[in-house]
Amino acid sequence: MSEQVITQKLASQDAELSGTIAVSQLRRLAAALCSSEGDANVQLRFAIDDQRRRRVTAEVHCNVHVLCQRCLKSMPLSLDSSLDGVLVDNDEAAQQVPRHLDPVLTEDGVLNIYEFIEDELLLCLPFTSFHEYNCGAAVGSDGASQVSEKRKPFADLANIMKKS
Image (tube, rainbow, N blue to C red; front, side, top):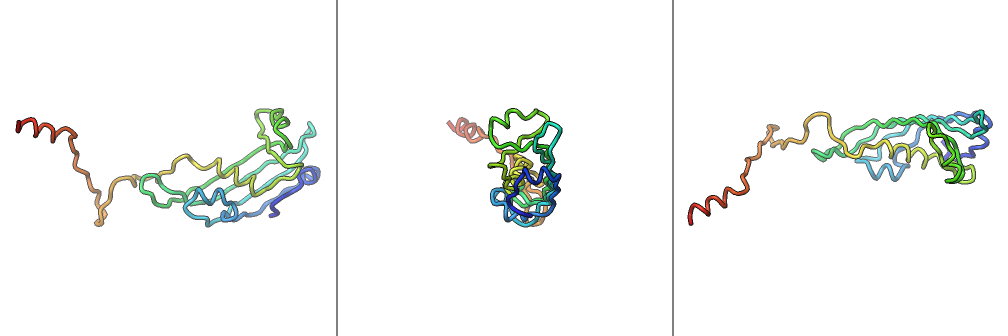
C-alpha cells in the first residue's frame, strides 16, 4: 500500500484500496504498545458525493498487545475503526463538514495513509487496559493469592498512649 495518495484522482475513479500496514511502521502507535508486532488490515474507499465533496470511508482492524494496568503484563487487544469522512484541505473547510461526517485533513489534496490510519488506531486505544479476569491480586510463587495483613494506621499510637 502506497504511503501517500492523491485524493482527487482516487475519488474521481471511485477507487478502493486495501492492504496491510505493519504496526512497526506506525511509530506513534508502536510506542504506546508492548510490542510492535502485527499488521493493520486496511480498506479504503474514495468517491465524490452528490455535493461534489471528496469522500473517504475507512475500515481498519488490528490486533495489538498493550500493558495491563493491574498486573503490568502484556495483554491482547483488538482495535477496530470505521470512518465516513470528507477530505478537506484546511481547517475552514473542516468546519463546514456536516456533523455526521468526519473531516479528514489533506495537504494540497495528498493524503498520507500511514498517518491517517495511525491516527484512527490511536483513537481506538483505551485510556487504561485491564485483563477481563482479576489479575490484580498479588500472587505468590505457588500461585496462591497472598492476602495482605490489614494494618490499622493508629495502632502504634494506641500502644504508646497505653505505656504513658
